[in-house]
Image (cartoon, rainbow, N blue to C red):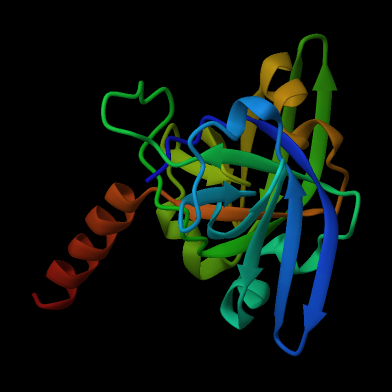
Length: 201
């Protein structure tokens, strides 16, 4: 499990590409290496990946076909930064919201509005999943726990403070860039339950 509080960004320094499969290597900062072991879960852009090798500060992760099909990790190139979060431990502060690291889809950046000390980003995502996007609800964007601002047909926005822009990759995103989306599981469960109840009436 994760909290959606990104602990930093890290560069992808190598990619081993195979058919429907790739391994990427990330250079982690020292503070994120403490206690890291093979088999540990680490979120890369919000996607839960398993550590398969540790060589000093270089950590390797395998990305299978499903991960490459659903997430923006398939578009990552050597030198790109990814948002990193180590798995939560019992007793940790939950500053964001509980997240699984299971990406449901990608969303495209449709509009960026910048003002002093604030940035508003609008995202366009598949219409059939917009039922889970609720005003003031939680959403995971590239592993970042954020509160949903306005919602319109097929689109929603979030408001970003300077700290989020500086600590994560969202500060460098541009129009048409794609981000990983994780829906709040509690919201999804409520919406799906209500739909089933109404369908059975």
